[in-house]
Length: 229
Image 1 (spheres, rainbow, N blue to C red):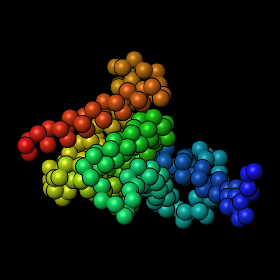
Image 2: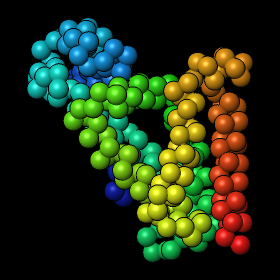
Image 3: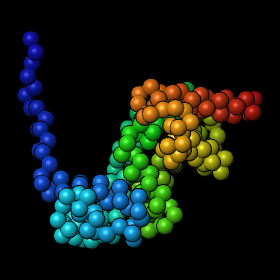
Image 4: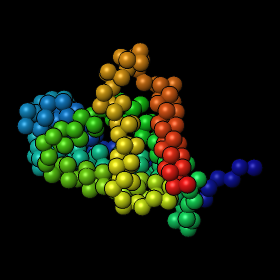
């Protein structure tokens, strides 16, 4: 007989109209800031794209600058959650080289699954590229919330997999290279899809990218271990 839990977890309350408006403004701003730039985008455009009252930007975010910061925090929360789940480990265990290698594979798979396969990742990448070319406080939020902690964690996992120094310049460059090969598929998406003859990126296309980036990781680790030998 199936037993009914005595204390079932409370169901999550549906988002309020204010929550929905706030989310719509963030998504609209992400898209427009990334496409047109912060200064070329008006609050009127953002409100129209979000189907919201223009006054709601000041109400929810204090103004356009606050909305840009909210966009950056949204990116941090989304990517941080995905990366955190992929890099999670049992704190009571010290992973060996094989376990660390497999964790790197899991991270790469998660990166492809989001950056390459999910359409909304395009808005994230465009926004970040704008911030990198025209830095603001939003870039500081993204760097401190995603770039530095995720890269630092990947360097430590790389060190566990290879025995190399996690703080060495070589390790840091290697991890940037590992990330960059995945990000390229989003940055140059139209050219990549045209060259490969893909109409869209679905499960089979994502699997093809995952297969190659995992093979690249395998080859790099093998080469490093061979050089040590």
